[in-house]
Length: 314
Image: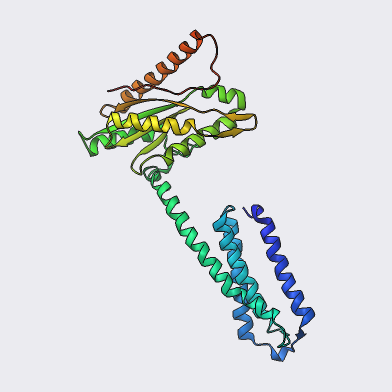
């Protein structure tokens, strides 16, 4: 991660060297007897700690406003404390003001860090809301799909049974989403790009779900949604919304823009998971076959995948 912030680290290092050069060239070295070790340890220790925090921040975060504010404020504290420490080694003329400006970086840095913490707090709220949508999955780490980091089909089946046992008779819907022509994406752009499409679709779906909804990668290019307290009609409306959102994605690959669309099938989650998933799989497969037949009858291949919704009521 530090490689992403190389220029920031170089700038901070040059600032420290510049500060040392100013004191060495414009100041007069104090004798060893005049060194105040308490001030050296406290001020120098503050500079070292602030520099360590800069490294910790940059090594654990990508670039962005929050990272710049936190690292920049800590760097100002580091430089100001370092300048304050240099006063213990070099005597500066009382008429000079530049050393006061350097030492004044500490309160400015604290202000910048405070602003960064404010934005970091809002960032964490958004991240926590996003992670709550994966809460069920975190209960069993073995249920992760390697590519999308979503729940897998086995975990989905267990959760369907869990919802049926926990709230018998209450509405609960199951939605199966299928990416149109996904094999064509793999063939044209390669499997690594196909994996990126799966990840992008998974993120888009998660952003549009409630915290209690469960999103899984069912198989291949198919995603499944388990929606507690949701009727089939509400699930179909949500599926249409998700289809529209994914259809508006702008996913770009090396070979050009990748068009992505979905078809879906919905059902009440009131039967055995294997039966439900088999019925929904047949529904989306039939929808795909019907779409292919219509396009063939029209006299040509489709320019890109087109969304088609199929609702199966259990």
